[in-house]
Structures are given as C-alpha cells and as structure tokens.
Length: 209
Image 1 (cartoon, rainbow, N blue to C red):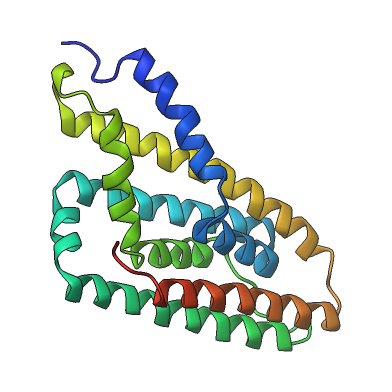
Image 2: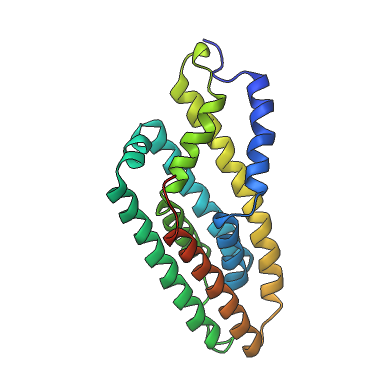
C-alpha cells in the first residue's frame, strides 16, 4: 500500500499552509494577547489549545459535519455567538487582572491558556469552513484514502499554526514579563482586553460566505 501523500503534494502544500499561518488572524492575535497577559507559558498553552481545536475541526470536516454547518445558519450562529460571549468574558477577565497589583494578580496557567485557546478556536465555526475550502484542493482521489489524505494535510496545517503562533506569543510574553509595575499591568490588561474585544467584534460580524 502506497503512502497516501506524494512528495510533490507535500512540497506544494507546506509553503501554501505556511503562508496562511503567517497571515495575521484571530488565532495569532489571541495567542499574542495571552502571551502579554500570562507570559511564555500562557503563550505556548494558548497556541497548543488553538492547535487542538484545529484538529477537532479537521476531524469534523473529514467526517462531513462541515457541510452540515455550512447549510445550517442557525447552528452556525449559535456556535458563533457562544464564541463571542466567551471572548468578551476573557476581555473582562483581562481588565480585572490588569487592575490588580502585580503581587496580587492571579497568574494565568499554561493549562488555563490551553483551555481558553481550545474553546475560542472550537467556537469559531468559520475554521471548519476554511479547512473544507483549502485542504481538499491538495487531496488526490486517484491515490486512494482521501479521508486520510485530508486528515494528514490538516495536521500539517495545524502544526504549522502551532509553530507560528507560539513564536508570536513567546515574543509578546517576553515583553509582558518585563513590565511588572502596577501601571504597566493596567496597560497590558487594557491592551489584552482590547484584543479580545476586537476578536469578539470580528466574530460577531462574521458571515458564512
């Protein structure tokens, strides 16, 4: 049995996926915000959570549930508004955290950042639609095992995102960890809350098209 993906497809897909991963978007901005708020550990945790959410979307798309989501406006909107509410809750949490003095602020654990990244990505229904639009272009039915090809290409896309988002979050975490004064904490809290609020607005204005 031959390997599901041929070398030429992989060599074509990787640069295309990397270009998409490097394009600033909601995942990158979320990881940046978590890095500012909680440092390097939170940045890695958020990036890993986003990647885990992407893998769920990839699995759902491979199972055909993405097609159902694309044709069901009510289901699409329910998931979308859950994501909006969660992002706004994170924005409020960031403001509260920024208002506390550095020694009384509750640290954002990598596990907590992972949970937030996972839930935010999972509550963005457009991710599964994007996966459905992009990945099948590189699937070759003639080689057989199209579902396995789809999953493998999606995994490459998700892991690339993990690397790029981690780098962005770590850079933000380095700056955030150097600003330990109460005034700087308030500024970082406001900046992080602003990022989450803008992401919530972006998700609220999203359409299925």
